Image (cartoon, rainbow over all chains, first blue to last red; front, side, top):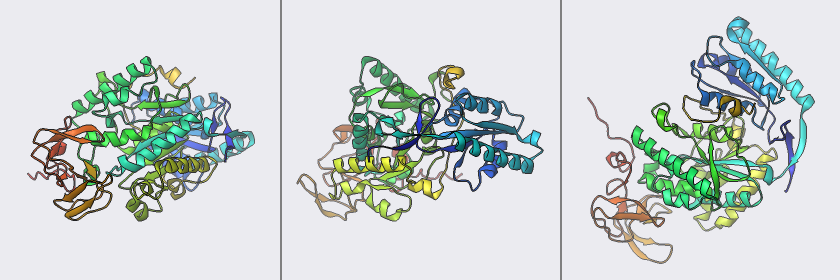
Length: 399
Length: 92
């Protein structure tokens, strides 16, 4: 399979899903937002819980509302919060996506707002259907994100290396590969910098590494958890070697910030760590879902999630494909796991075969097949306060 | 270090690459066994990089984990339970 039909957006971007995204602007609006979307497979929900606004979270919501997999947007607010649903709807409108917004207070409460919201979704779906254009897509159009979570001793031997091999194929065929978790590269500064595609990329990688290390020192927490230890990982340095394997072997073009799309194809590192002067504000890698949202904000169509211990998360907007290097986990959690890279350890397939099979699976999901978490209805999301010095909000919105 | 691809009881291990090694204790899938003697405070090497320092002398065939290896960066991990990775409970 070389090409499939994607969804062409007015900015030229191509999506693999044609979703309606409901975005809420404060925790107080989350119930209504979920009621509006309930039972509709093409309607996904994300939202920000804070009442006080935050540039990073706003950029994230705008990036999701105008993501290639999203065709229309409904923004839902309570009515008192700083973040304005009208601004989210207007950014979506500017990107030529059908969009609407509402305040629950103005609608007259829960029931009226849910009713209004459901009608708005019907209107958006009709407008979207009328304007949706299909276009052929190939691997070269794909942006793939990779993250690991619930790692164990097999993750660095099979799960992450299989994704790394697939990333090499993706990059060689002109696609875009994004990996993250700089806090899981601790102790590997030299190995990371050796992979830089240019002197500028090396400077960016060094800055991202140094910031992450001082961040972990400041918060006295490294990105390693009880499940990792129980699975045989002893130190953050050991976990990092395994995590870094998912980047494959191609040169790293540079460092992206949250909500920043890759300026050109190739392999990129996403930096989701809060910036120095505001370091205690926000927590990096508070959980796996936050990392997945960051990757989607950078334009990832699909997320490869590598888990040795077994994880059951999915995400809105972009399907998650579950890869495990632990065949025992694959058998135990078969309904949740898409790909058994543990076959590399048992000698049933080679790492190269695993990379080929994984790329074929990615293409099937891109062409419309549901990944396991997607079919189960997993739509976890997590947006929170964080501070990153990123381009101005206007630029961040790609206004 | 070698990594266990299956749970193993104490006794002879089959090592990819052909080394002869006997596990001194039962070791679980994904965990590490030392191939060489390591002196206290010496580097513990896996994937060709230093993943930590030995906190006591380690024999070939010994399970290597939180009880005998510490991170150079993260001070917290060596305080955790070596079997579960869970923080030891501090009751008031």
